[in-house]
Length: 117
Image (cartoon, rainbow, N blue to C red; front, side, top):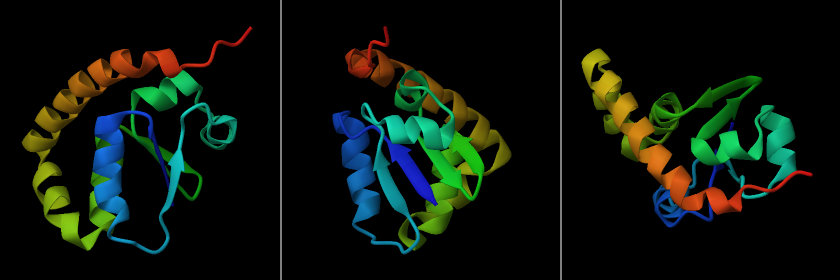
């Protein structure tokens, strides 16, 4: 599985670095910052990739709060997060909260979007 994240966002990088420390086999960490290969692999443009966390598992693309659940389920140390945040009511709140925070992180980091002429 590949995890596409924004390494230029300090908050995003800090969180992903915690997950990377677990050294889980089968997870490739891909920085999406101005990464044309990531755009092609996900069929997402740079703006979409900067906006949310994405995971590619086989040929399926998972984004946003669902991507976090998928990731947490794969990392034993964080599986408790998966169990809690996957509860239906909690997931709805988490999903809206994630979108709210991700939007403001995107606005903060949108200068990273490549200008295509």
